[in-house]
Amino acid sequence: MAESSDEKAFQETKARMLRGSEKYAQRAGYRLNPDAEVVDTITSGLAKNKFKYGRAYCPCFFISGDPEEDRKLICPCQYHREDIEKTGKCHCGLFVK
Picture (cartoon, helix red, strand yellow):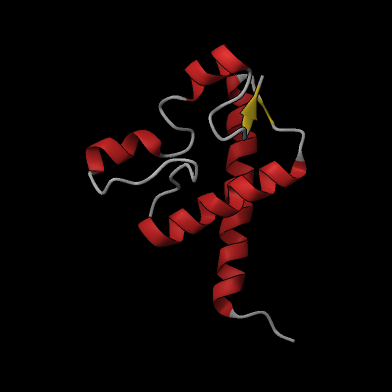
């Protein structure tokens, strides 16, 4: 059975989200969560938000519709460094110390 073009585009976007997250984690001195299921869930959410809103908003926050406020939620969100410092992981758990 052939994969639909929408599903193929979604999977490609999800793979891009994963690669981008891996690169960011390496540059920032973090790593991705060792739980592959968490990483898969979050990258799926990022890809869905990319399709729905045009931006890879963190799937763990609600999008308000205010572009200025929502910009803070583009992954990695504005809050991730502080969260990682305090708890060892970002809000959604994608990035860890």
